[in-house]
Image 1 (cartoon, rainbow, N blue to C red):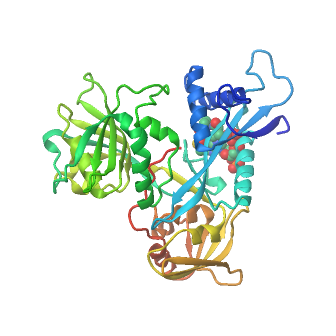
Image 2: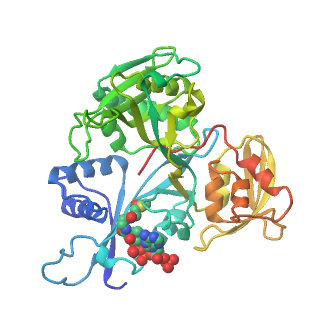
Length: 427
Ligand SMILES: CC(=O)SCCNC(=O)CCNC(=O)[C@H](O)C(C)(C)COP(=O)(O)OP(=O)(O)OC[C@H]1O[C@@H](n2cnc3c(N)ncnc32)[C@H](O)[C@@H]1OP(=O)(O)O
């Protein structure tokens, strides 16, 4: 490991000192995910987003000379990006969260412990900074549990038969109008902010979502000429939902519309936007890769089989870094008490804690001498944290141990949230 030097820095813009370092870092991320090589303007656009998001970039660099013909030592062999946003942890409690992204290790340097080194150093630093929770969305589900991350929300791909087969049992308010995507450059963040406040499991979005919704970010970071948009308006005429979508082309049968983003601050907006999608002429199918695992649409359709869903897959992964801070930061729907015995392989957040909830607010104290009610890993606590999975399910999976009868059911009730947990932000 002595061959690598780890450098942390803030992104720079073209023309600023340090931009080459930022550009090489961005390129290294691209090659880590096997992206095609892209022009300089693409890196410049990403760097601008990084600056807006307040990202910190970490790279591991080879030291000394590298063999002729191989990538120069200015190109990092490992990348690790972070930024800080908020997580809705139930009943509107917005908790500071440390988001980890763009984790790559160059193929020829893999399985030498670079990810482990960057991750453990970063989590320890984040804990020292007093941030109670770390989060990521994963390329593979087999990597992050060893670092104490647990799956906290799920999503699924759906395809919905539209045309005559699409009918809502209760017609929506139909307050939907086609819109110019560029209007979303302003409106998308405002609408998302409302969604964020009412959705347990939601993570605040990075600037790229705004640009994508506004048609300013296609696959190559250029203008997206295929993108279309529609807005939903609330009773007072204020926009409270939007959908962006693009047509797959006439050669594709059945004619299919792909939802790019669907953000609705109210159930009425959600159903009305779907009714709009369901009524698009000449289209027989609408497809969406990031639909909620628990989807009201399935219950709203007159013919529920018009919606076909793939199995739900992991979406948001959380890592509790400080159990008392994390548990007191969220809110609760019922009162109760539990002693949790939490194991943490990285030694960051483990211990025995007494959680007492009164009037929706928690107090947490260390309880070394107390008999535990539940014995669990910090990853399972993360899975339960925003109510995305029931304690009962984790107990049935053999992931948590009920040390006192009734404790699992008590945990179910305590960690339940006001509506299905869901994260609309990939990062
Ligand atoms: C949050 C995100 O950005 S998700 C994106 C993750 N990145 C990618 O998928 C891009 C392609 N893959 C890669 O760049 C690399 O293979 C990485 C980043 C996944 C792993 O980097 P490496 O430096 O090889 O990992 P490292 O050697 O530190 O391994 C750490 C541990 O994870 C395990 N591990 C690493 N990769 C994988 C994997 N793909 N699947 C399962 N386990 C893995 C190792 O076996 C090791 O286990 P142990 O320490 O418990 O024995």
